[in-house]
Image (cartoon, rainbow, N blue to C red; front, side, top):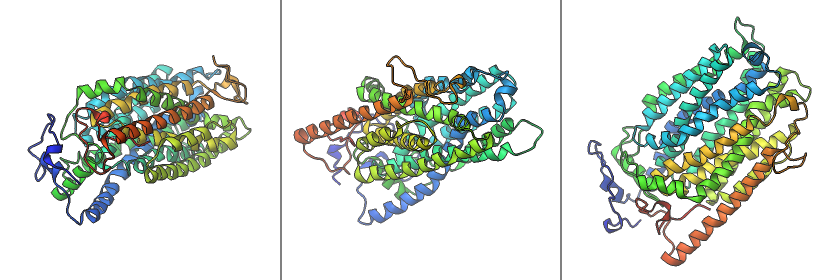
Length: 491
């Protein structure tokens, strides 16, 4: 790997002189001949420490945001919402999460670069866990709304920061699979949440079953947040979890095909560049469609299955198989995308699959297609934005646009449209056989195709103009981010 000092510029990076054994010049030190074996050992060490913590956190994050669908069947509307015969009040309680989540995701993710990831992620988990458990104490519509707003606030500090954090330790050939492991726990949460709800449905206790549900699913989040404060590694150049030699390897990996920041750095020009990049807004359209389907599934799948003639407890149990299959398909597609170094073509396929029909047999296709697509989008942008700061602004930007789809998804299946759930009148006059979420998933597939072609054309143009680079070489993205001549996109 050619890392001559001439090819590297410091570009006003902040250096932490208090880190033993590592300095910014380590970015320029080539690894020894045994580096591949050392790197494999380092990767296993990172996986064993990072993935269990973050995957379990996301499991409970998703349980905490999506357990309203299960609580609905356990009597929440009758106890707190005055029966809510139209389902409108429940829809707004479900939507409240997204209001703060959307507004705060961008500033929180950018701000997270100034703080220790261990402290930032751990504190956000503790605070959203408190918000989630407080839902068990709600006795009014207002109380539920306040708790859901708090949940959205502190989960906003978590989601974008974690995707950014993965890019600190994993290369573009590894990130897709790791994000799939992490996001796959959303599918696990869908299956696990159904099993928990099924069990609680049969428990005889002095409090309402839905209150017990919120307590049992919110409390572990607080405990995991405390665990995160002590166990999650810091940034590669500052973590004490790694030896000095391991930190050098981690820093080298962080700079393959791009260049990472050294210390707490936010480049304002890259934040502005993120807001000016049309591809991020196209990614937002993709994410909008995916989140519309995801939000409607998580909130209403038990109810939709219940309208097919099943008892409430059985409806809870029947939500498990679609989520289990979704987790498996997510892992397979993400692993393939890492090995083949393509995201767009697979995203086109999974989004198309997700848009097929809406009865129970088709819920397997919807969940599999939607979850796989979201995993691919997150992996796609974790590299293709070029620099840390642009990722810190761009990932939550498309995420915030996409989460608006969550609000739409929360209102797609009102009780007044049951049991068939076929009413989908929109300004586009989509026909009776095509739901709003399916239409948006097909739109996501078209947008993914557009992005993939665009990335390929840019790569070809740069290859012709500057030559084909070694994919393992460090590329100075400190000034131009993904527009740097040596940077290549994953199509």
